[in-house]
Image (cartoon, rainbow, N blue to C red):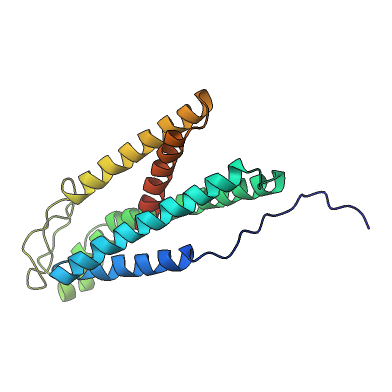
Length: 206
């Protein structure tokens, strides 16, 4: 039998961390949906704290295993392919969001307003006869459904999320630079772990 040329996989011991992460995500989701209640706020904060603690423990374990030489060339290729497919899925996700925005802007608004190519006067008069095409869509076409005016998503939570995203990207770049220029020390492990945690949180929240 020919010798296997693809290396071997390191199989870690059983860990309870994935279970803790699932529970933390569940608590965060339930708490966020009921954030207007006090118990919802407590549940969301506890879920986020548990998730951060789990990620820190998990990343510390991965770093320890890597420094111990438990990952061979095959594992390295697996990590790289996993990251490649993750980025590919992210690109497809954002493409879908962009296409949905274009679809609403180019097709849905003219249909509702009964104007433009493909605009249906019947749809316009049956649904919202007072609706007028405008972009960004700041006026609710049906005030009775809820609210008279919709404020554009420029400030508030979108701005905060953008700042967090930029800060996490800067931290990740600085961590990569420190790992290449200096020896791997304990403070750099925490630095890299922080960057990875921020990235995982933002990826999960998309």
